Image (cartoon, rainbow, N blue to C red; front, side, top):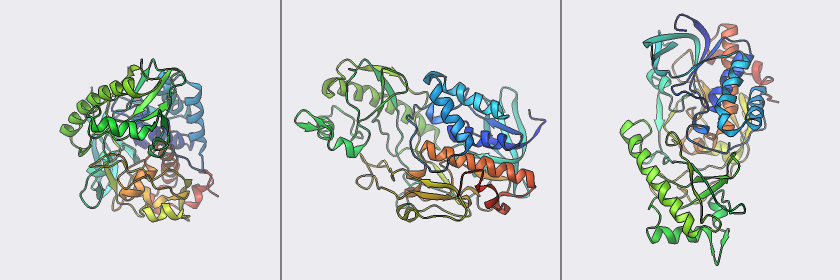
Amino acid sequence: MSDIVWDVLVVGGGVGAVSAACASAKAGAKTLVIERTGRLGGAYTTNLVQPLMGWTRTSHEAVNDILARLAASESKLHDLALAEAVLDSGGELLLHTWCVSAVVEDGRVVGVHVLNKEGLHDIRARLVIDASGDGDIAASAGVPFEKGRIKDGLTQPMTIMYEVEGQAEDAFNCGCEEEALVLPIGDSTWHEVVMAGRARAELPEEVGIIRIYSSPTPGRRIINATQINKVDGLSAADLTRAEIAGRRQARQVTEFLRKHGPGYEKCRIAEMPAAVGVRETRRFRGVKTMTLDMLLKGERQPDAIVREASFPVDIHNPDGVGQAEGLAQTVQAYDISYGCLVPEGVDGLLLSGRNISGTHEAHASYRVQKITMAIGAAAGTAAAECVRQGIQPRDLDVTGIQTALGIS
């Protein structure tokens, strides 16, 4: 594969990357997905970040197809469903391959340096989509970026999400802080039960909410509670610390559920993720930038590539518990601008997923998976059109692809 010049190369294998690859291949571009692990799905499969969250009014055919395949597949075969979505769209896959850095010539990305069983070598492409989450390729190409909140640079905490089984069929769920405040547990609320447990040191100091969701796997529940603060997703040492701390917290949270969660007296850990979940690292500077004000006002964008995205501004507290600024802020359904996908100062490259251009606050909304899938479909469609026309992403007339993206 290193001898081929691809039209579009997608770095990363999460659901947003798969969406980008399927859209690109469906538009006729010779497309390759490079993923460093042995399976597709990213946070959805590797980190057990489920269910898929977020909403958009626009829905590309590639996104619809992926969602349909996931719904029709057994949960433990979701990675295969995603792989088949890429292959059936006409794209190709290269797994077990680490994208080390960008190949840059005269200010333009023309491929990536990769490392796999064949050693270090280059894979060339007419256009690269960085859907790696952390934006390793964009960073190595010299695209300027920001990380964390303005006042101290802290990013949102990491989390080990995991599944339990053995609970009663009618055991309660709790989706968010707002629900925990009113969910009755005996004479208290779930929030009060958790905070009392924290005060007695039955729970880790960082845990201020235990969220419980239904799992795609029958008979299981997903636990979203562990929180590892003040760690950097770009540091191997911090990632190592987060893996161990998060798994220890999961053990403690499960013990607490058995004691104080009605219906969870006999629950046990059924599955742990392959890796800790990372919410936030680099946010690159683009031609345009998403801001909190745009989300709160629900602004329309003439160069929209996603219409009416919606998810609360969900900032997990980087140095405390719960939300950073009280409860999550509600947004008005907002558009995402194509300019947020076009990196500042570098050609041959498009951004996709949580690494697009936006502020710390705006990122806390658009980072979730159904929105990143819509962003991915836009990136893939735009990339294929740029290749077809022989132009750079910053020169693309977005109105030419808005129909394909369902923009009206």
